[in-house]
Amino acid sequence: GAVVSQHPSWVICKSGTSVKIECRSLDFQATTMFWYRQFPKQSLMLMATSNEGSKATYEQGVEKDKFLINHASLTLSTLTVTSAHPEDSSFYICSATVDGEETQYFGPGTRLLVL
Amino acid sequence: GQSLEQPSEVTAVEGAIVQINCTYQTSGFYGLSWYQQHDGGAPTFLSYNALDGLEETGRFSSFLSRSDSYGYLLLQELQMKDSASYFCAVTDTDKLIFGTGTRLQVFP
Image (spheres, rainbow over the protein chains, first blue to last red):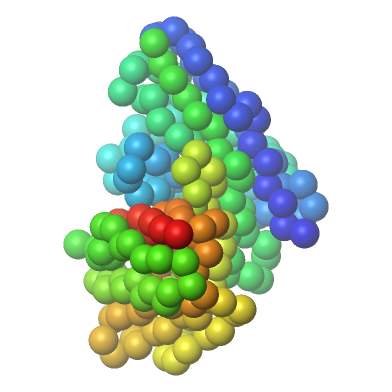
């Protein structure tokens, strides 16, 4: 149980385009999902907390107009990287919690390369 | 500020025991988790300590001392497949704050 999927697993795009990444909880409902970014050989940095039916909470330094988050249902959250630039190239990982539990279950990640 | 410090790299041989330490300084604390991440993969949950003491799960054990803001992950009977990065993470209210990560290399 507690499986989280992400789509796509990797994406290559041109600078200036927008990219949407989906995060789904497959066998449970997730009121809260989290979006992380990880650069090579670095730790996971929390970008934002996605709450179903309400606005996401962004961490300090994360541009909410650039990284659009939508959590329209209890099983789906999306992250859209708008007007992507090469410095946005990174590994984007989502996670979700089962209500009442502390453990976060991570998706397999999406590798983004912006040319 | 908030920080979780870990050694950057640890090496060991198959069958050995290794301990990965984590010291933390966070504004809030609800518990300490450990995650394993293989190259190119996503983190997978290993253990969680909310209270002081030792938690054992198979070959892996995790320890927490809240008074010392310190914890460690103990890996026994090391196998080649244990070569990965290991992250401690503090649950601070409703979010996880990850440590700097420790790369473990297991040699035959």
